[in-house]
Length: 141
Image (cartoon, rainbow, N blue to C red):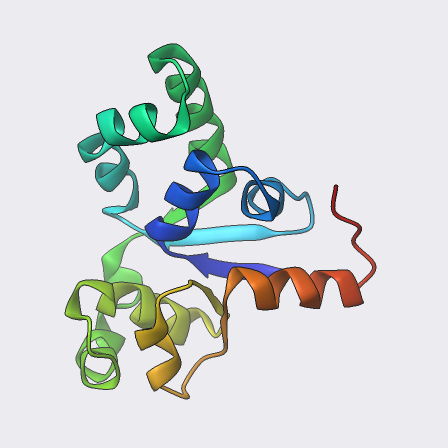
């Protein structure tokens, strides 16, 4: 399954225990995101380390694994969708995620409610995605 993932999902996966982290690393889930995705992690590294209980070395190791799991798509691949995406959601900081999903014709994985304001692409919350994957036969720990 292909999904555009927003940074808040991965932050939650790193900080908390639960199904989010498990889904991030599922072999049958392929994740895509925008160019500034990993910049946000670098920017908030100390906060994530503090909240997650990870050591800086463990964070760095996990960060490297995430870089292998999440394909970053250049803005030029979806920039023709930016203007329309900007009109569809209220949080303009997330316009690029929506534009990428529109250009790729794949769903977004986000718990941010403003993504549900639009109907151009399917949006899964973590709870909805876990239920969908269970229906497809995946068993979570």
